[in-house]
Image 1 (cartoon, rainbow, N blue to C red):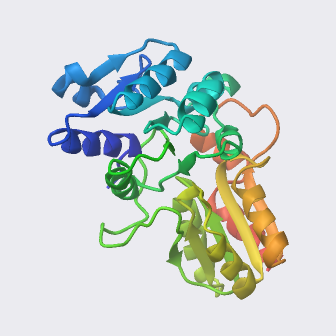
Image 2 (spheres, rainbow, N blue to C red):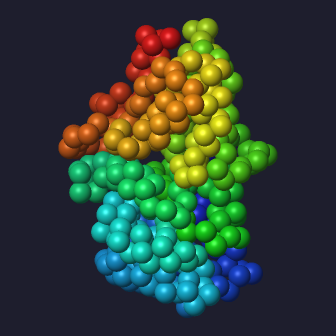
Length: 308
């Protein structure tokens, strides 16, 4: 069953809001695109509409958090993290207030709308801000588990999700999700794919394809970008000798660069970072972009066979 991660966010907020009156949402004309309309209808008095003004969105959320509320501020990732970066850095992270930022339609979810709507720098920029936790769930099951945890703490957080329904990587919710610790979804010692977000499904499909060819490829679901699970990376490097990173983000200073830093310092091995190139991308739907730039199981599997 396919389900969009943004829908899982609303489901979790609706359930928690029934018992926690401090849960509020702040939106920038984005309640529909964030799938938060059901929350706004159920709790109109706990819904703040900032309009298309992302700096105000973050500032309002920070102010509400300072007053004891628990705001979840949602806006397209491309605008939230670029237009309001100073407010995120100062009002949220430096001030260490309990704001949960929801970057919706991240990566190339808005593929056909072009570079203005692509969010391919958010992980790079936000990871450089002290005190900012960064989460990128792979499917709606992970999203729900993440939401349940972050609604119970006060850590400034950015949670990044796509727009479209996605195939789950987990068969059910019978697994432990610990923020800051990767999940091994496929075992293997011939190579390791370390993926994040909705690219994790692609990583699993790639590993399954290679398994049919006799290659055992480990898949690590790196759902937490910051704090990064360095031990799982080091273990994968030492036990497989080859790491491929996979992300719906620029190859510049994203997951690949973060993994490379860990590998170079602790366990040198072969490494290939896969993501979107450092250029203005072609225009097209997200699936068309993935195929054009080689981020599909067939092409990734062929690349890994060449490397291994």
